[in-house]
Length: 194
Image 1 (cartoon, rainbow, N blue to C red):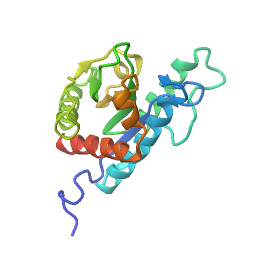
Image 2: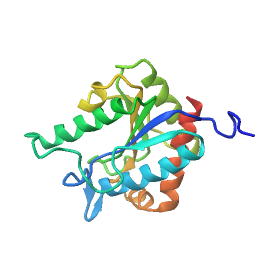
Image 3: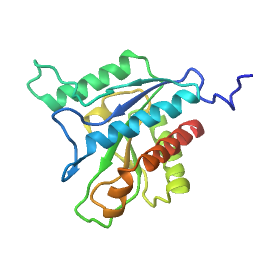
Image 4: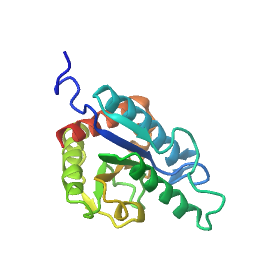
């Protein structure tokens, strides 16, 4: 028997956005590239959400950027196409996966950023952040972002920074499949809570 407990996200349409890709590596440490870690976590998240009944779309499933040969500003073109995908699929929610970097290498912990363009964004951010605190012992807080992608879509969603590549301990964990699966599971719990 199928129930809200076995499939709590039944028919919820979610866009999982693996940040960066192609010519845009995102942040990096040596040959450890944010775009690669983002994609692996996004694929794990796709699996977890699908098992819970969600209809999941991905902005990318491989190492590409979404800009067009006609875009004069490649980064803006890439982000614009991600926005179009979210709108085109009539998503209920989007989750944008990224990795943080900061000059202070002691900073660590997953965190969630949101734009107040949609009243639910703060709610989503809070639920996922609460799970990061419980499951991953993160001491970070939710933050507001005014980055292009997040202030230009009214569909509910958040930017998820899965940790700091600049922190030695976290850099090590972020490369481990076991930890990537734990991140995906924790994010999914936050989505179900929401």
